[in-house]
Length: 191
Image (tube, rainbow, N blue to C red):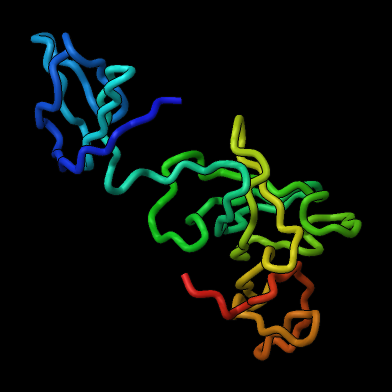
């Protein structure tokens, strides 16, 4: 592991930060043909004197999902064994995710109890909060847990927002009752 010393020096893309004869170009930097190292990002210059590496700690790094992250996702398709989702954001972060945004929730990862068909608890158009259980090679999610699950749902018939009534969801317009795996803060969610 490289120990870096933050210099406190702020740099912009194109700022010269070092000479290639003294340092190696690290993350957020590049070396030109004349042997000069330049910043390729806005951030703080970090210098590792022992390893002789310079890098830039970006001010606003892209969001790359890892195992354990909690995300907000839109269910786009439901098969008997899985739900396909598009990740909208990392929970609590309004920035777009820069890594893979297509994800799946397997039927066995919806809840801790047995589920025969994903469509019994998740439907296209549902907005869910889920935890990343695998980031590579494909993103796999789980909604098992009290704070995970559907946070907003629409009526399957008229597409109006559903309200929670006990452990079911209810449509005032159609007077339909539907079942979902809801989060503990269903409809109280703020993006």
